[in-house]
Length: 465
Ligand code: 4YB
Image 1 (tube, protein in one colour):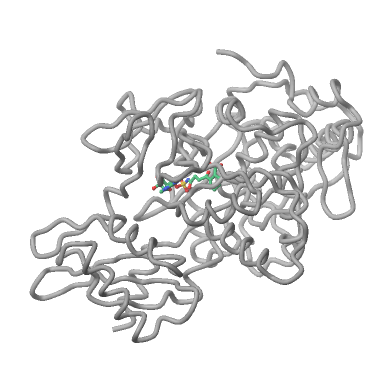
Image 2: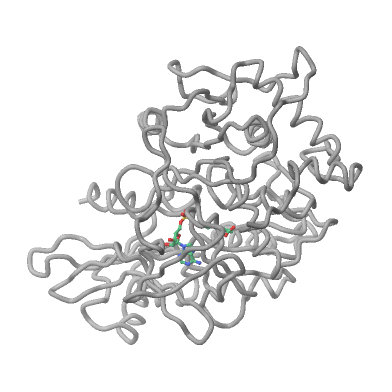
């Protein structure tokens, strides 16, 4: 096993390039020497509060520099970090915390939730300055990331520093991220896409930028790199259309998490943003395949340190970026008995390039015919002005289930647009696959999170009737 660093990555950079800018937020900038010193201080602070090796610290918070310090300090003392989405409901959070059986919790003062059962930790400078007696062991469990899949309880995916550095190393063989560049922490640290930004930063020893939510747009224009879900890029392009948009320093954007429309990357490339299209998943420490955006809707080819194969149309993956396992009852279980991890995503090769066809469990049956909703959504997304499209089954006495479309459009989904969509689809998809109804995406379900939840959309459809 190649080890990427002989010591803690921040210590490595603190020795190699102590005064280089490493981290900035607002007006403040930290050099690598300062980052390394801070991490050691907060780590000693955690030890004084009773945090021990292999213990779990849950963090319920939006991105902030404090969350970054906690992650690095937790790893520094040999403990583990798990991030929870602060926008989850109290019952959801209670259930997640209960099943994680975490040892400590951290949340910002302004958070509305109550967590009385857990010992709170703080970011405190040490009372006795001492060197934390834990050495760099890159293969030990470091982070847990909750991933919801399509049904049931979220799973807690355990990664080591090693697996996430392998992910960073492979991606950065293809994508430039130089020492002078800065990557915006543009996705949440409770999701693999946000954590992956931190590991690329540590791997490269480049710049990381953390922005207050209110400063997000300004920060996005000022950095060189960002990871975005397609809807975030869409919003950025809309803001660039205004009369006096902030000048863009942004040169590279890594996209992923959901279908990436070619029309979107084309628009972004036209304003000078180099787009990278990726396909990835939590269990593989984010990106698995990638490419520079082009005229095809594929997700590129397999990155170094990952392997991918198709079996009966399903995408199977493995490699150095794979997680250690799932965390349950204070134990780490392997993700699968098999040699490969089955993603439940359907794929197709077109030469060297992978195309994602949809998820196995989204498929439904209408009048005895299989409908893969993503196939229908792809056609809808190609219609001018359609920004998001989801096709879901609704119960039907005659057909069992029938497809209904939920769309977000640039204008208004009025009667004439519905008719136009219907006629457009008539020319492109066979009868049984054609949506029997077009509905406007409800405001609260379309934006905000990383991805639109089909489960929430289905529940919304059911309560509507
Ligand atoms: C896709 C998909 C695609 C995932 N087309 N379905 O650093 C990155 O790689 C990154 C950059 C920007 C935005 C997101 C990322 C990610 O990490 C995404 C990883 C992710 O979404 N993980 S997940 O566990 O939450 O979901 C995985 C599932 O998402 C996959 O199994 C697919 O179903 C779907 N997905 N990329 C279509 N390009």
